[in-house]
Amino acid sequence: MKRLCAVIACVTLVAAAVAWRAPVRAAEGPYTFLTEIKIGTAGGWDYASVDSAGNRLFVSHGTSVVVIDTEKNTVVGEIAPTSGVHGIAVAPELGKAFVSDGRANKAAIVDLKTLKIVASVETGENPDAILYEPAHKEVYTFNGRGKSATVIDAVTGTVKATIALPGKPEFAVVDVKAGRIYNNIEDTSTIVAIDTTTHKVVNTWSIAPGEGASGLAIDLANHRLFTVCDKVMVMLDSTTGRVLGTLAIGDGPDAAAYDPGTGYVFASASDGTMTVAKVGAAGKLTAVQTLATPQATRTMTLDPATHRLYAAAADFKPGPVGADGKPGRSTMVPGSFRVMVYELAK
Image (tube, rainbow, N blue to C red):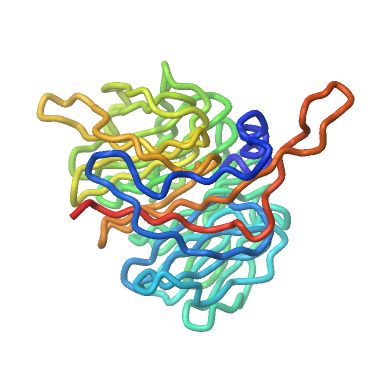
């Protein structure tokens, strides 16, 4: 994902003389603010991932992964150390998690019981997004600077394949029945479809009018992909790649999610909004709510078991004023890092 340095740049013009905090109540609609989980430690953040069966939330944070109990909404541990965490993929049936360590060009293998790193695997350059594919028990790291995907045997921890990609990969999703993994290619504004048996790219689709997509979600039942770009979500047919519709969303989005239980699709943006949308009977993608979130809250994840949304957040303050009289890059307020929790309104 687009790391916190980009987020900080986005909020530089927004930060006031004091740290800004979002309203604790959301706008009218299906979702409402529930609570915030205080973490407080220093460092930026990237992906988050939920283990619904284990009632745990994993949030990448600086050089570690914060582990949260989603029943108690409290921090219960961490995965550390790494030189720079991006994403977390959980394989509950194997008792393992996998963490992409972008700076080390490795994927760390984690014991879910102890939260200890037990091994590491060499990947392509700058692994970012990471995904577990359960049918073949494989882990895919999507390597930003390497413009490739590394396929790892999740049982043995050995590399099975390296897949060349047509640009810089971002988020990915899997359709086990179709035998496909779909991956956003940010710098070419395309989506690639990867065959999970042959480990080859079998389709490349344009996402126009979208550009520079990061977050990606999938509706498996209706064969729809939702990719988020600056100010627009693009919906595509996952079997043909045909663009089915678009929707205006917030500025600077980085994550998307789809809830098969409710049919809601989500996009979180750095401008302090999270769009909640739905596909109607006529197949049109329509916004049903805009949640107010803290500025720079561009990453999030969904727990499909509880329908709760989790979004990483922090407060920022302006940097020192430069010679041109303008404030410098904003910096995170110490101790302000937290996770915002939103739930379906009762």
